[in-house]
Amino acid sequence: MSQPNLDGPARDTLRLIGPDPQNWVPDRNGVDHNVVVVGGGHSGSTFAFALRRSGIGKVAVIDAAKDAANSGIWLTTARMKRLRTPKTLPGPELGLPGLSFQAWYEARHGEAAYAEIDRIARVDWAAYLDWYRSVLNIKVQYGTRLLRIEPAADHLKLHIERDGKTRTETTRKVVLANGFLGAGGPYVPEVIAHRLPPSLYAHTSQAIDFPALRGRSVAVVGSAASAF
Image (cartoon, rainbow, N blue to C red; front, side, top):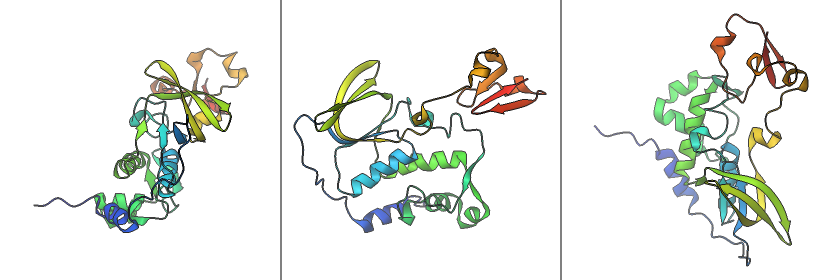
């Protein structure tokens, strides 16, 4: 029995829109990249695809996480079972139905199964993003952390850490698509951090020992949750 072509809609879409335009951005001496996208999640991956379809080559995507499973929040710190946004909102497909979550989901579970859900399961969204990067051949350089951006004449110097070593790369433009980390990282109000031992509070970006909180009341202050 033949296996269903799960990527058929995506492959047909890519065939119909034709090959990617050639890179129209002229090279500059001493500049490694046209664009560096910081963050390989759904926003960063979408930027990479959109730039490619706009004829902009030499685009690099970097992510500090060690791999896709640890990138972003979906399989790490997110607690909800389903996304908060309706399934009908436009996503990374850029108006191309064959690249949408709906096309991905229906190819695997059927039209009726998609009709039954009102919101997308968090783990399904993570799996869809993995597929999106794979079918579009979006390469993410994991384990690569941006330390500092330094202006340099008509371009930018990026101080990057990779495999425990620092190096400098140059780019014309930078896209910051690093999600939660782009807001400055985890924040715990001083009234909690300075007055309570760490055993009595946890930030949502941390691994939380939920069994230890069983039977206790929980107070949420800003982006921190405290158990008393």
